[in-house]
Image (cartoon, rainbow, N blue to C red; front, top):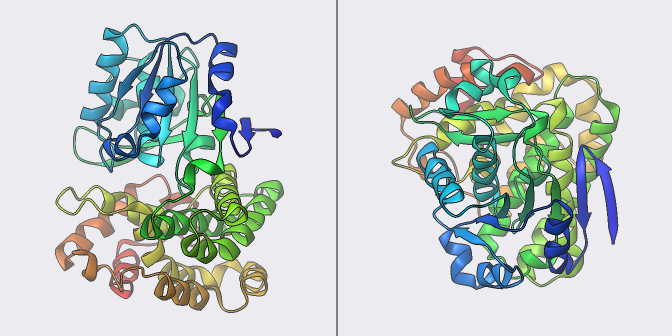
Amino acid sequence: MSAINYLTRIEFAEGEIARLPEFLAALGVSRPLIATDRGLVATGLVDRVAGMLADASVFADTPANPTEQAVLAAHAQYKADGCDGIVGLGGGSSLDLAKAVRLLTGHDGPLEQYTAVAGGVGRIHGNICPMIAVPTTSGTGSEVGRAAVIITADGRKLGIISGFMLPSIALCDPELTYGLPKRLTAATGMDAISHCLETYMAPAFNPPAEAIALHGLDCGLRAIEPAMANGQGRDARRDMMTCALEGAMAFQKGLGAVHALTHPLGAIRELNLHHGTLNAVLMPAVLRFNRPVIGAKWDVLAARMGGAPDEVIAALNTRIGMPTGLRAMGVTDAMMEAVSHAALKDHCHATNPRIATQAEYLGILREAA
């Protein structure tokens, strides 16, 4: 068992889920709302977790890209059932929805006023209920992230960011990812790897975060294919959860152009595209775009990755079955044009090492098409 204090409390070990009742009791939570999704319910895990608790309410209608509508429905259930805390159980969508519900336990809606692009950081305070985040995929790292990314009522996919948004406890149990399907392992794994790459390249001065991002990158690159090959592999699953955790622990440095583009792409409702898959497809083009300004960091990445970073990621995408490009995912030229404008307003735009124009964003999208 390893207890780590960095940004928030992290409990990381195989079998750690058994301690959930203990952690809830320590936070003073007697009736949590479990925020999760229908897919996880079908696996039996939600019943298993709820069965550990004396009293819990389950909200299982988290969409693949969480919406303000779903957040409001979950919050209404939280109030109606007399809940006093939240357990986010699932992938990044469930964890982000849980964070947004938690925000509403101490703040009035709508959510848009708390988004980073609306200057909402200063409107968020800590008078909110306790939350435990339990990831069941190794991708977003939302369990230790300061943000909840939500499609707001006006259809934009925006980040709500504050240190107060950090879960009270991140309960990381790699056993919960055993048996994760290959395609989901690949897509979530590339999400985690992209976080490590983008946070390392971000220009802010934060040497500890850069070191954490590089270690996470090492873990992810060596483990993603073994984890796909053997869904029960202990070492690979632990490394992938470490990669996801560390990529998000380094978020405080900022992300960049990949996420500035994937947020509006993920808000295209008729496509409902997977965030990690989008990150994977865009990463080679963004790496090439950033190369002229990141200096020695390119050489550091090349040495650790065993070749030019853009080429290594492109080859990895091919081996693990990522889509050949955005058009293969249904993204049209008109969508690319709209996304290139929306990216300029995303909170990740300002923390890319090379600030892109609308035309340059469009060029990246076309290169990744």
